Each structure stands twice: as C-alpha cells, then as structure tokens.
Length: 230
Image 1 (cartoon, rainbow, N blue to C red):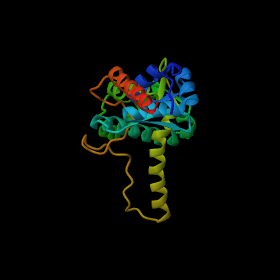
Image 2 (cartoon, rainbow, N blue to C red; image 1 turned 180 degrees about the vertical axis):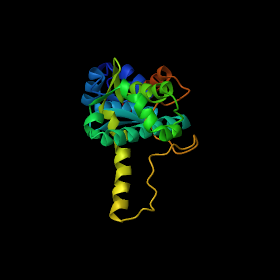
Image 3 (cartoon, rainbow, N blue to C red; image 1 turned 180 degrees about the horizontal axis):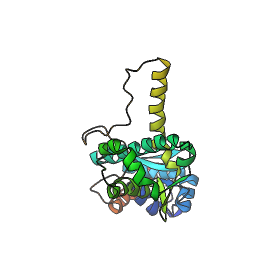
Image 4 (cartoon, helix red, strand yellow; image 1 turned 60 degrees about the vertical axis):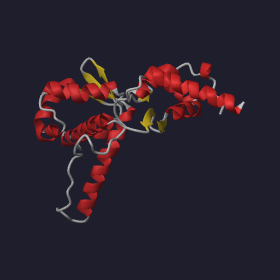
C-alpha cells in the first residue's frame, strides 16, 4: 500500500493520543474524521509499529498493542467495575443505564452517595475516599476518552460501550442462572485481578519508548518498505 505521510495531517496528534491509551471519538472531530477517511493507511502505518488500530462501529478508535503493561490491567478493570456499579445504581433509581452511559451524564454531586452505597465494591478498586474516586476513576475516564468533564457534569462518550459490554456479559450470566433456577452459580461484579493477571488494553499504556521516538521509527520503517517495493 502506498502511504503518503504528507496527507496524514493528523498523524502526530492521533498517534500521541492513541499511544497513551486514549480513545478517539467524534469529540475529537479532526482526528476522528481523518482516521475514518484514511483508515487503511493509518492501520498499515500503525501496524508497522506493532499496534492494531481498532475501529469500533459504535464510533471510536483505539489501539490494541502487542504487549500490555501489568498496570493497564488494574486501571482497565477498575473502570469496568465502576461501570458495573453505575449500571446497578442507575437501575435502582429507575433510570435507564444505557441512556445515561451512551451520551448521557451524571453530576459530580452524585458521587459521594455512590461511594457510600457501594463501599464494599469500591474497596476492590482500592478506592475509599471521594478524592480517590475522582483521582483513580473519574480522572482516568476523562484522560482516556471515555467521558468529558463539563464543570462537574460528566458526559459519557461512545467508548464507554467497551465497559458496557463487560456489564452485559455479567447480566447474561445472571439471566442464565435465573433460567436454570440456580442460586449456587457465583455471579459477582467484575473483580480486580492482581497486577500479574491478564491485562485488557482499555487504558493507558506504559511503554519506555516515547511516542515521538516510536512515531519516528514507524515512519522510517514505512519509508524503507516503500523503497524496497519501488
């Protein structure tokens, strides 16, 4: 495939965000538009670097790296657990969880009551105070493109579907247990694994190589490949 780097005007910005684990959606209109219009070219270039660019049909892009650092596991599962808690909380209030987590919002003032109500589950995520809830979960959601903070109102973005998928899987297990009339099947909320557990590439990626060096290397490899094909 012939790749013209001059046409990829959003390359540096897109790579910088994706490399750090950010999910690019329509909230980043310029990057999202170019990734959509030049998807094959971006995929080929990023593949040379060792990353798989994924386009979710629900409207967002993210990287799946070849290797994932253990700390990704902790962050990803912490955010999945928080999503599970939100789904339970919203359902208990008679609110539609999907409508809230798919483009809806919650207020910062709702978080203290949420922390108190689900304190035992938050302990799994090593979250015991309101400050830790904001720092370890809410801040990470906004840093990674899952939500936006607008003066204390947190609006959820399409990438939240990645965590909603986990919650739907848990709900499927519950429905299966109900259909079998069994009370013995363990159906817990998502449980955080130790740092040496299997990782999920939904969060920030801690890689020693800087994004500038990695991008330069990928571009050099792509140029070399094109010269060999010429």
